[in-house]
Image 1 (tube, rainbow, N blue to C red):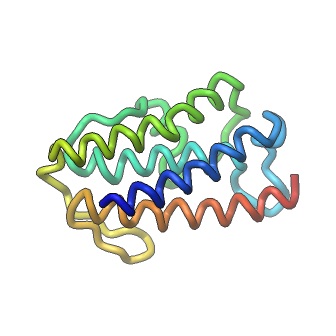
Image 2 (image 1 turned 180 degrees about the vertical axis):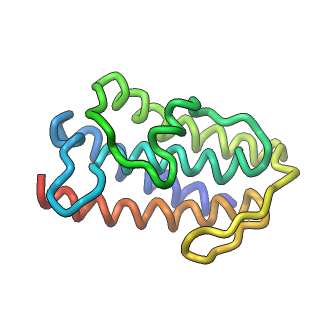
Image 3 (image 1 turned 30 degrees about the vertical axis):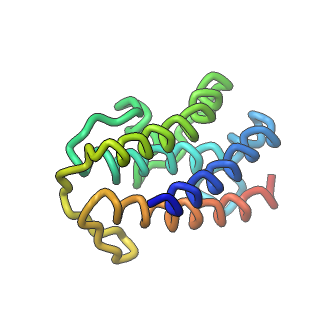
Length: 151
């Protein structure tokens, strides 16, 4: 599991750089031909990790119900986010992964509701979910790299 967390931290560093290097206006821009923007992708990544690992394990998540409703699969940006929300997402990028590693080390992930992703990967436990998660993050980072060309 150590490598899974190192890969995820690397992904989160890339995401953090987007938050540091783009203005609030750029983060909120939805280019023509796209359904979402940079900040939605980052919020989505944070929420999905929590849903896949904690929610499907029957454990409390570190993200609010409001954040889940705004960034879960099937959503899209409905309005611009504020700088306060960007700052919250920035802090959650690393807080969630650090806590997940602590929780894995503590052995709290005992139960899991099996789940098959839209891409066909079946997760049978929280370890599978973390392994799938970095694929999911990489896919969204790829989308973000496309979006940034148009903002």
